[in-house]
Image 1 (tube, rainbow, N blue to C red):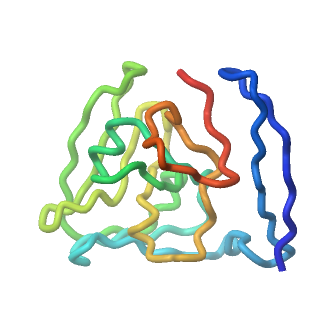
Image 2 (tube, rainbow, N blue to C red):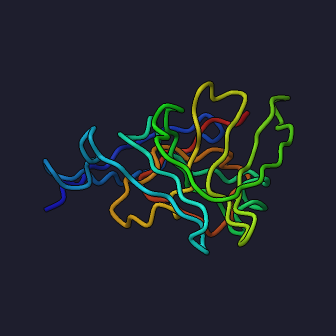
Length: 168
């Protein structure tokens, strides 16, 4: 059973009010798994496999143009794990690095066979990796807690209950 709360929020960019519907699950529902959880992320062809232990630090969505290009869709949906959470990796990967708008590097890592971006690392994320949640094949994975680069999102995109980060 879901408990629903409505919040009235004033945005810094607009003076109008908006209502965010926030669904909170009762105890046990939609919560992250225990700290002993292990998850496996795989690419489309199953050649690359990452084994992750524990829970992510954060879950986010991003609508920046680079994430749109990288995923081939309107936004990325990723989980940030501590570097030490990566307890196993197999398969051949390749990485490419670019400089983001902050001036810091971001590195996408993908399967050399099918091209699926399995994870990324960023200079701004010390000792961490950001895993593409679709590679985890877990429909119960928690929703994003933040949408980054909301001013770049497609006009039809509405992530209900997910706050938008302030413009950079």
